[in-house]
Structures are given as structure tokens and as C-alpha cells.
Amino acid sequence: MENIIEDNSIINREEILNLIPNIPFYWKDSTTSKKFPMYYHAIVDRPIDDYFFDQSSDLSSRIRSEYFQYFKLIVDSFCRKHNILYKNIIRANLNSTFNVPNYVFGDPHVDFSKEHIVLLMYLSEISFQSKTIIFDIHQKFDNKNTWIDISKYDPDYFPIKCEISPNFGKIVAFDGKYYHTNRHPKPGENRIVCVFNLLK
Image (cartoon, rainbow, N blue to C red; front, side, top):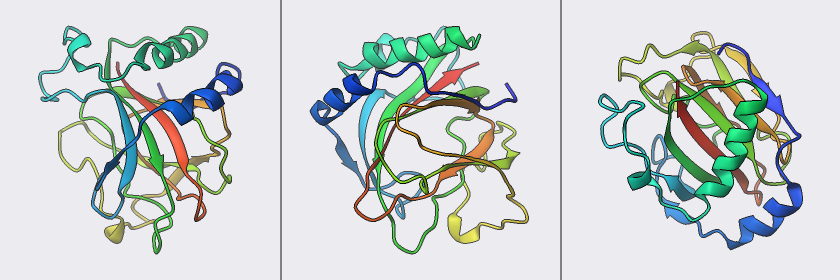
């Protein structure tokens, strides 16, 4: 999957606006690093061991949210429409991030150490400055260097491939081998996304 797919036609805006306020979010003091905490709601837990995870790995024991079926239906509608096949759900989360002073964007990272698709749903009204950044460099899935400390970020080594605007209701899918991150929203804004990592 080399192309980046964007679709604004699947998510029901009114449903999401009614749903999100009822979902409990919990504090997490770090994401890639402690510089970037967030609020989150776990939908599907990440597998304990990346190496042994495959299409036969049990999903039901890792589901953590009553909203799993709601979001999975959206994922599957998107995948059917765009002829995307996947073998398993690696993990799924609702993430609520916010402005972090002194940083323009977070640590470049990949989400998993096997071939996968990143599927993002943008679920909040925020300024377009909080774009998803996809870098023109990818991980070799060797379970090393899954994230790069932003303080060591070198734009010459990590050129930006593209940036995606966080339009409310947009769904985006791209190859998970590419390092990615997001620009921070304005102070006072919460950037809410639903992310599914899908095993190829």
C-alpha cells in the first residue's frame, strides 16, 4: 500500500458528536516518550509479543471497549470501499492530545514492528495546523528504532513526505512502515483521533 487514502464520506458526524462525550478517557504520562503525554481510551490492547503476533492471534481477549464494534464497523466499511485487506487488528485506541509547549510536533515513530496499515479517524473540531505528518523514510520492521527522539530530529535525514489536514470526520489510511507524527493543536484544543493498526 503506497498510496495515502483519504475519505470524508463514511463517518456520521452527528453520531460522533453524541458519542465522544460519553467515552471515558484516561491519563497516560507518556506516548513515545514522557515529553508527550495524552488522554486515551483503549479499544484493542496491543499484543504482548510483536514477534509472535499473526493472523491467528486471538482478538477477543484483547478487546477493551464497549465501543469496539461501533468503530470496527467504520473500519470495515472503509476497507471494503477501498479494497483494503487486513489479517488482524493489532491494536486500536482513541487518543486525545493537546498542545505541548516548545515542540512543533511529536516524536517520529512507527506503531508496530510488522507490516501493517495505519488507519486514522479524525473525531474533533480543531485547527488545521494539527496535521498528521508522514515522513519520507520507513522502518525495516527489525524491531529497532521504532521512534526517534524529537530533540534529535534532523529534517535532512527525515524529510516530510506529506501532511494531512485533520478535517473532522475524515478517515486516512497509509502504510505503517512510514515514520509519522502530528503537529500539536493550538493551546486549549484537544485533537481526538481513533487509530487502528491493521496487520497486512
